[in-house]
Image (cartoon, rainbow, N blue to C red; front, side, top):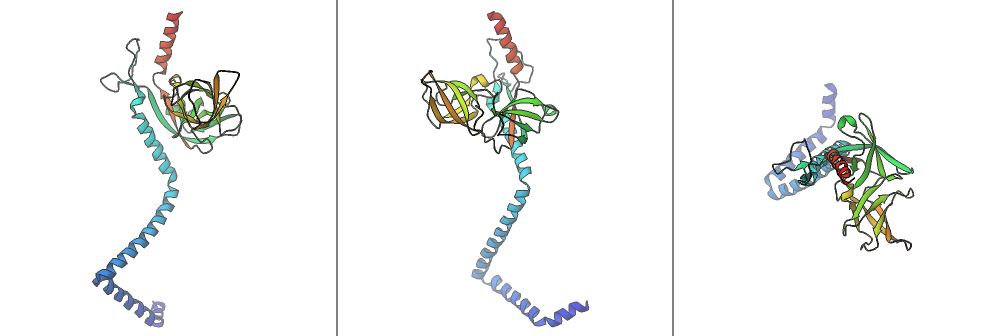
Length: 285
């Protein structure tokens, strides 16, 4: 306490000046509208700038939580798309034990589950991703996997809480895809060279294709992917003089160098489709 009094005694003039200055400024800004408006503007600008910098810092440390929330929201929105539901073909006997979407008999065909990528390779001949969802979360082999920008690959192995995905940058990866503009269908594969490009083959030369055209999943890929998911964009058209087909070099829609969140697609009608195809093959035989 003695030191406090000594400090006040030593700096009394300065402390008294500061008190008077604060009082004078208060009177000036409180009773003068012009000065009050100027002070409010400067104060708001200053506090806004400080608040913005503080928010940027806290936002950085909450990025993981934000990304998880966005992935969950994307999963919920994808599951509400009408394209995930399908009416059964009344010309065939198709048994479905799930609850109809509505009274018109629409059934859910696709179910989406979000996941986070915990491991990823791009420089190997056969590249894969590991995601933090497995059999306990409903993930099984042969399910399609997409990113927010396009196709990623197919689940090839699962454990209780993790799954391995064969990406498009895998020598055994094969995806049926179509030219979005004209509808011609071919097969997408990777030649094992640059991870920046994939290849679409068996596109007839009668097709009108140009650089920049979009390539999407075709109806023949519906076992794993909904039709219309972006696979890539055409970067180069190779005209093979010895055949009647183009070979297209594509830029993948998914950037495999920084993919962090993906969505796994379950086809709820795959068993019924497989049974129907088997019965149809028996009839044809």
